[in-house]
Length: 507
Image 1 (cartoon, rainbow, N blue to C red):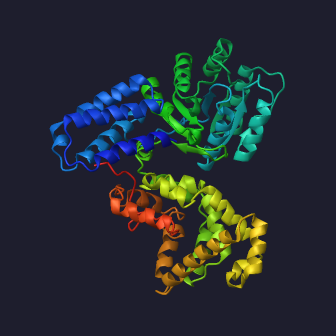
Image 2 (cartoon, rainbow, N blue to C red):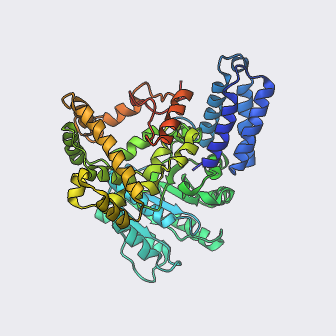
C-alpha cells in the first residue's frame, strides 16, 4: 500500500538532501510537489489543501530555514502531517468491547467490499484474544451468503449461528442476541446484507437492525481500491448509521492509498483495521504513526516483530538453536526458514517493513529478490531426497540435473541455492566456535524467559529498545546494501546491532 506515494515523496526528499539551507522559495516548491504527490495518490482535494496549508506554515518558520539540515525538518513536518491526517499519535483505536457481554459488532458495507470475509477475520482475531465469538449472517438476499459465513467461521475457529431458512434479517438478529446471552458468548458479529449501490431499502433494514442490536461497534467495511468512492460511501453510511469505525480491505493491492489518507479527515471516523490479504489472518490493526513511517520509506519494525511473534514456535526455535550452536545447518533447516518467511508475508512483505529498502528497490529487482525466488528455492529443496538435504556435498552434476528438472529451474539456479546454503552454514559454524553463546542469547530472546515467545515482556522490550527510535540508514549504509544485493550477498538491515524501536521522527 502507498507504493506510488512513497516513491514520489522519496524522490522529492532526495532532491533536498544535498542542500544546506532552504529558502522560502525552496519550501514552496517542495510543498507544490508534495501536493501533486498526494493528489496523484487520490487523496481528497480538501484534505490535501488543509495538509499543505499546515505543513507550509510549519516549514517556513525561522528555525527550519536556518537549521543545519533543513531537509530533515521538512521530512519531519511531512511525517507529523501524515500522522495527523491518519488519526494522530497514540495507541491504535481498538474495538470497544462492552463490560457486560455479549458485545455486539455490526458489519456494514457495499456488496463486494469483503465484508463477510472481514467478519470472519475479526472473529479469528478476537478468538486469539480468548473471546468466545458468534458470527451471524443477516444477508438473506445474496445466494449462499449464510453458508459462506458458516464456512469462514469454521476456518477462523469460531461458532456461527445455525441457519433458519426464510427468517427475516431483524429476526435473525434477535435470535443471535438471544443465543449469545444463553450460551455465554463474549462477542456477536452481525454481518448485514451488502449493497451494490446505496439502496434505500437495505439502508433502512440496517438502521432497523442497529436499533434492535444496539451495537457497541458499527464498522463500515470499504474497499481501498475504490479510492474516493470509498470515502463517499463512508459519508453516506454515516448519515444513516451510527458508525464507530472503518475497516479498509484490499490494502495490499492499493498502490496509491488515497482512501486511507482521506477517510479519517472526511468522516471523522477512525480506521481500525486494514485487510492485508485474502488469507483468514490477513487483518492488521491500523496505527497512524506506523503507517506514516511506511509512507516515508521508514519501514515498520514493530509490525515485523508482531508477525514473527504470531508465527513463532518456541519448540522449533529452541531445537534449531541447539543445532546451530553445534554448527549444523542443513537444507531441511533452510527450507523451514523459507516456509516461515512465507507465513510472515513473503519476501516482498517483509522487505517492505525494513527501513531504507524503498531507496534500493531497483537493486532488489536486479538481484531478483522476490516471493517467486523463495518459491523456486523451496521447490528446489523439495525435489531433493532426504539424504541430499542432509548431505548437500553428495550432489554431483547428475543429481543437480535431476533436481533442476524436478523443480522446473536451470542447474545454475540449483548451484546458486547450494552456494547460498554453504555461505549460511559457514557463518553459523563461525558463530558456534565461541561455545554457542550467540545462539544461547538468540534462543533466550526467542523462546526463553522474557523472550518473544515466552510471554515475559520481550515483545515490549523490543518495541521500546533504544528509546523507541529507529535510526535512519546512512547514505553509505544504503550504498553498501545495494552493493551486497548486486553481488548476490543478500539484504542487510542497518542498525540491527541493538534492535532499535520504530519511530525515527518522534522526539
